[in-house]
Image (cartoon, rainbow, N blue to C red):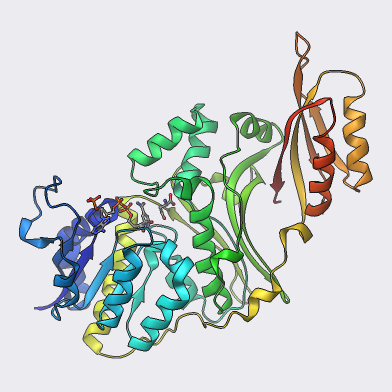
Length: 432
Ligand code: NAP
Ligand code: HSE
């Protein structure tokens, strides 16, 4: 039986998932491929931490050199997360001629040019299926299945934690904090959950997808990012009253030579296919010039689905080990020429949901709409929700027709200075 030895770096949610999957399904993989994946070493940082009882203790090591210097370990899976030491271990493994698999979108989005270059130079396989979309095969879809298409756009729900939080808040009245706690307990969140909540994890992922889709490297620093930390239950409910659902969406769109890469909370109509993506599910709505529209949907975070993606890369890496040939499918070009076509968010036109907090007195609405009119923002519908019994502020919710982001920003700045406006106005973009 031909075995391929694997080293895991990290034994947390994903590392344990990969171990369990191979314990169960390695014989099946052997049956399908003729190669048997065998985990031979696991790097951890604390040997005393209680590990799974059924994992032989001689697999664990604290010393990365034991893996890097061991030529009988051709495949290394980096499942530590964060930048350091993950990036160093990935680069050093590649320099040692190993095939590398990583679930780490942060290192790819922030240092992808360096990592991809090293993998190309070493003629090594660099697998990163698990870095985006959990168990959904989005990377291989873009790299292989859709390679013949000019990709026009990818719009997706690409973060399980935030989608879980928004779903639990709306459907079960959980507070933001309670819902986040649950997502952490289920192993969906990043070690630093602000990466999820503030939209950075989604930004990491969409910059990787944009680089693959458009064939040039698009650095993560170019992505416009807003997270969900300002979304209240009130907004989720008002949106629902208007027939919308709020989702954290990631966009990568290329139209002629204009490029938009952005992440922000977005209202989408309740009957849109992405509106039904709940909890830790993710989905990618992709449009290519020949394939047309396709939708990929599945579990975007969690132990088992992510392990499934890592193992798909392990099998690809084993194939290269076996054939001793260089990967045919290349990595994104290091040319950054497309970046100059990025459209600044201020120039993009959106419809908006706007929630004002204003005093409940006559003339307030006309003051607000007067300023909106001055900036050529036209109102599609408006609702003032209930009168307060005592004198105080009330929410006024508006939906607008399309207008330029820069005009809306100027208008809201002026509106927020009105005496009758009692809190910073909230705006959420609409995509329909
Ligand atoms: P995790 O549960 O926090 O596990 C990380 C593991 O790495 C832990 O076992 C930790 O050791 C170990 N570690 C940390 N620093 C180390 C060091 N210096 N040397 C050796 N080991 C070290 O994280 P995770 O959820 O498995 O995520 C791992 C990666 O997968 C991240 O890049 C994440 O973004 C990505 N990912 C996660 C998911 C998901 O659903 N969780 C999905 C897709 C991708 P200790 O056990 O001692 O703390
Ligand atoms: N923290 C990430 C998420 C893990 O919630 O989507 C999967 O990449």
